Length: 121
Image (cartoon, rainbow, N blue to C red):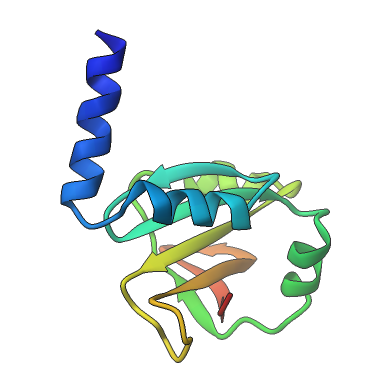
């Protein structure tokens, strides 16, 4: 039964536009992080704030809003200073050469908007 559910999940994601190869690529880019949301439009990773690239990214000034996703408990995210959220926005380049870009949370959520920066691979 479990194998059937896993196959259904794989087929649904494939049909909706994100391949296992793409997910594996992003999972490799975020080694050491936990993927907490998977959808056809974005992947959200929870990364330790102490990782060097996360720490360096968080030192930059916020320039955009991290989209509020209903699958994320923002109160818990704001209370967790040990982790940082990074959203991979799929199928949009936002001036990046790849067909995706990153939004990294750099400030706590303010109401329904979370301050972030956009980054490329």
